[in-house]
Image (cartoon, rainbow, N blue to C red; front, side, top):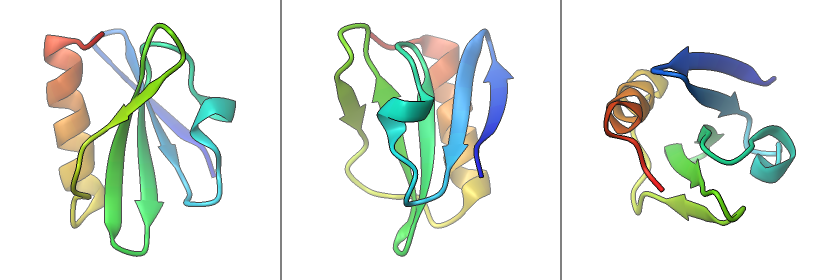
Length: 76
């Protein structure tokens, strides 16, 4: 199930493992994706590319706080 939280005008989109990032996110959005090994963060760039952190977070709460911190500083 897709859940969207907005922080500093950035959409943080929470997705289940089987939901494709590109189908639910647009440039400037941050995706939190649930997986067997934890919660991963992905950033949708202006050109449609997706950058990701190397390591997943242990919990949804940790991933959400990291996404909010990234939203504070912005990314491109």
